[in-house]
Amino acid sequence: MVCIKSLKIRKLTYKYASAAEPIFSEIDFDIEEGWSAITGINGSGKSTLLKLISKELKSEKGMITGNELVVYCAQSTEFEPTELEEFMCTYTKEAFRIRDLLRVDDTWLGQWDVLSHGERKRLQLAVALSSDSDVLMVDEPTNHLDLQSQAIVIDALKSYKGIGILVSHDRTLLDALSKQTIMIKAGEIIKYRTTFSLAQEAYAQTLSHKKKVLGEQENEFKKLDRAIQAQREQVSLTKKRLSKKNVGRYDSAEKEKINGALFSGKDKGDGQILQRTVTKQRQLSEKMGTLTKEYATGISFEGEISKHNFPIAVERSCIPLFEETELCFPRLSINVGEKIGISGENGAGKSSFIRYFIEKIDFAHEYLYIPQEITDKEAEQLFKDVSELSPEEKGELFTLIQRLGSDAKALLYSTVPSPGEVRKLLISQGLLKHPSLIILDEPTNHMDLDSIESLESALQEYAGALVFITHDQTFLQNLSTKRWVFEKHETQAYTVNEILL
Image (cartoon, rainbow, N blue to C red):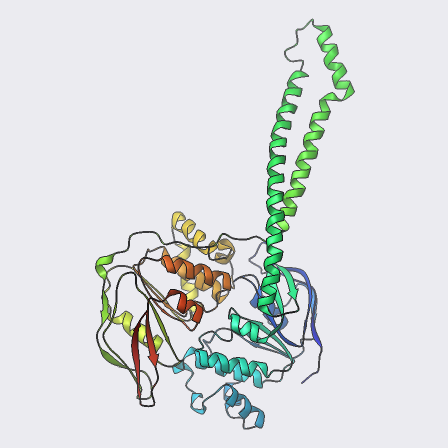
């Protein structure tokens, strides 16, 4: 492994061909050894920055040094790592150490299609950690992982000794690993030499000051606006007073008086005052524009909930999972207004049950189902469907996306939207149908913290029925009115227990 002290980024500029403005413009910062957290809203450029560091993308201007050996562990688990077979067939002490750290089972080789997303993620990370690197970048490493797996991943990542770059919405992971925090705010880089939580506190103070300054500037802008209006009226009156249009043909005295005023420049004075005020207002507007744009957040659900569809029930049954393993559950029902949180270990059959549930329910009206992962093909179809919406529907969709913390137009016209942005678009599109039932499989995966809090708040107010799978304990506790807990047993049968809260 090459021994380096830091990764240096100098005057880095990057713009996507389809975008009007660069996503980064002459940014400068260093990333030292140890783990650095990179945070920002979906679409702010986190994944783009990782791709620039890994040389997957080439910058238009500027340079990056210290990235000779870079390993990038992406957030998607759709495809298995190219080096997976080589890693699984390597019997060195280091390979065994990494497999033990991440609890990798030898039987997983060749089973990618039937592995849970959590098991896939552990395999991804194992391959990444085993690779020779001086910079290791991991994008949302705890997506899909249960609590036990999250602890396993944290211990494994702590063992890395080079420059680690972490993108995540998992606050526990960020605080457990980060020694530095790099925030991306509207293309601006803000760096703190501390953990994520302490950096958040520092930024909150900065944001509070910015909002105070912005408020003062908005008041000054309004004052200047009123002054400009009054000065324009004064200019108009002066022009009218100095006009010879209504002066009598033989009124020489009045004409001489007007000529004197024109000669002395009295006609220009009011115009110059107006011009100075307009210039001052324009300069103030530019200063206001430099402050970070804060979108209004918080979405709401409109439309009537069709209560006659409820209760919805699946009868007691057992369904096959894999390798002669089955999942058994009692009769389970959902009533209007209930919010059912599904939890359990990876591989316990949660997603399989949801797919079975959707096939079995007899639901006459619209329901919204958001899967755990969205493939590139599904994302492509999603964008096509959105393009065919009416102007009114697009307007409503734009509002929902914006209130989930993203620039709606930039998202819809982006050629490389992040998984978090695609998820926001899918949720927003589904909400246009005013569903009576919402089914979400790991809804917080890939989404930034602001968006998670906004979605959580909205779902608390939702009047229909909600069923959701999550490993996010805060999300689970804040939303659940009832729990379905999936448990593994030493026998071949897994079970579901219903818990009323």
